[in-house]
Length: 267
Image (cartoon, rainbow, N blue to C red; front, side, top):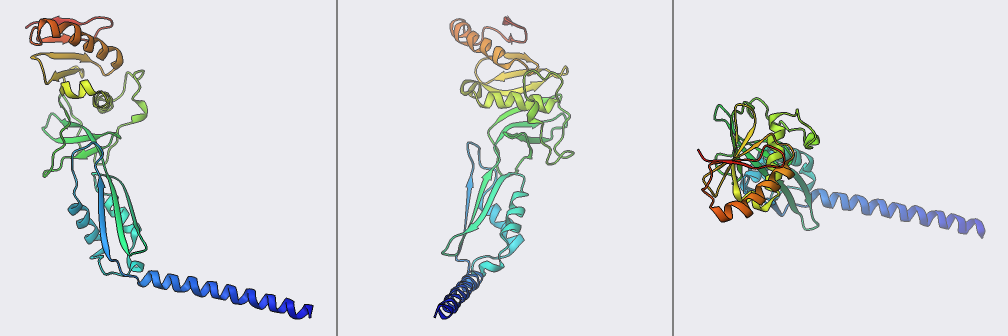
């Protein structure tokens, strides 16, 4: 009797395992043959202006995988789609997945430009909040801070370049011009007052920075992109306690390069 019960248990376990494998195989076949019912593309722009559209993403997907609607899910290579979409210059992250209904989702995070560079050859490109170089989109423009002047760096010669954001500390005095511009643009973009007041950064022939405000007929001489907290505290105090009383067009030049002082002059 014990031998019979043992054999019965083994037989039941074999049948259960066989049934499980059959169900798994059926589920896999069912998934493979399930048709893609819809392609749903979403783009997270964050705080940035639009540089890429759903139509742009759809075009990339079609070139990579063809028409997906009605195609068996088992024949759709999600990894290839992610790779193709991620290779687009304005895309920061992408995720491709499907739900139980057969809908295919493509979720995209757009890069967020913080600075537009116009170099000395009038080539335009962006630097985003992660320090990456981005080309300018001829169809869409990002409303961001502009830097021009004595700038030789080029996007064409450095596609996909990224500044070293690990050395953006004020203690670094010999970093590259692009890293300094990135540090300065990052600082301005994260300060509500400065973001609304500063419209342009001019790089002079000494590789120092001059800030062109939106309000007031003056130029702010910043110098190097170092000790920014101290320099901008001086500028803010001067705006609040000085120019608000004597007028925003009193001086043409406001120099905040030097420690513990603001030097003003009228040309």
